Image 1 (cartoon, rainbow, N blue to C red):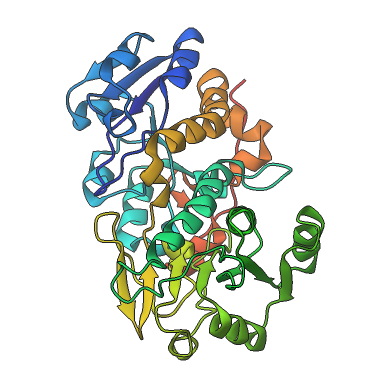
Image 2: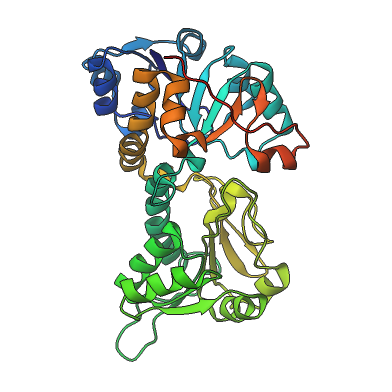
Length: 373
């Protein structure tokens, strides 16, 4: 199969879809990989790193899309990238179509693109490709919170996350006990913070209790407990995920108004719309703003801050799925892996994801695949 890796177009996106090790594995299996010149530069991976594996370096994005049967990328499609897609192409990426535009989805349907969202692929333990990025985002959320609690930040509270003898640590309140929330809780606890995790799933909270030996306070989520937790927080981490859907605003503007002056919000859910009513998307170079005297950090591609780690993590998590399709063909790969098929959003000109079809009033058809053997 011919596989293409374009350079990411989204502003300040430094990740690349596959590392040289992944490209090497595909080429050794007999496939051809085209990579756009400079695609790995943001992750300190040179064209030479890729060419040494046998990859073909091409010098325009148009050529990558024109030559490839399967496109592997990282960020959601831009309008320009949507135009470059070829008829019947296979696309792997973080799609986040629930917060995309209807025009983007209509283009995918018109071109009969099989669009597979990394964030929707499942296995027996959860969402394996998203998991790697969530681990990074969870750790980063605490690093970032520490920075914006400092006095040099305009409006910062001037407090140390872990406190010192005789001085209380910061209170870190985390909405969501999934991968982001659990990883953030581990990082915050390791720095000595007081950590509270709020979730509506009692089993997840029990897992937090067992994992951290009751060193973290767990609370069942409802409007009352969320409003109390938000008011208490020095740091509020939004780590809410509803698979394939826009995230609801669990924290209202009135709740934000009740927060401590200079408190920090890290809305990790912003790539799916955000779980805090006062959140709006920011960028790595201009990451924060203040609303009601609360510092908001709402960067949707946080893992790009550590692009090399993130690129290798994405490579490790996604390569098996890409190689399965390349080795066995799309239909056979989807038939043999129900978790992979759950990632398919558009297929043969129709929308195969019911949640997205409902959001954009599109016809939904259940995925029907026939073996090519």
